[in-house]
Amino acid sequence: MTIASGRATAVAEILWQLKRADKLATLSSIAERAEFSPGSNCRSVHSCLAAVRRDWPHLQWWRAVADNGVLDDEQQLHIVRANYEVETVESGSVVVKSLVDHLMNWNASDDVRDEG
Image (cartoon, rainbow, N blue to C red; front, side, top):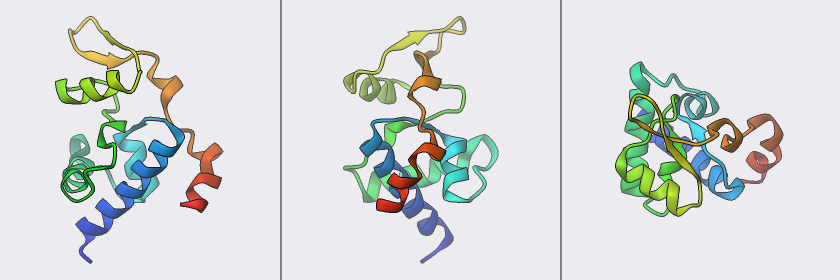
């Protein structure tokens, strides 16, 4: 297994945890949880998400949000379908409303990690 595929597998497991908990997570927190560096502009995590979308299309990749909460059009569609509220901020970007309230609390969810 290559480093990239090992990382993608770890990210896939985290996405499964997020789905089970009905939570979101930032790209940086996913990388931290998977024990690798997110890379510049979270490029390492984006690469893993591309592999996840290709190899595990049933996983909810859209639960991995940018650290600043900004959503692209496709992600916004999934977020809204999952009943999360979004809002447009001053810059014109669309973000998850009250993002912090929807983020996974890894410390409180260690039991979910151990079950998976």
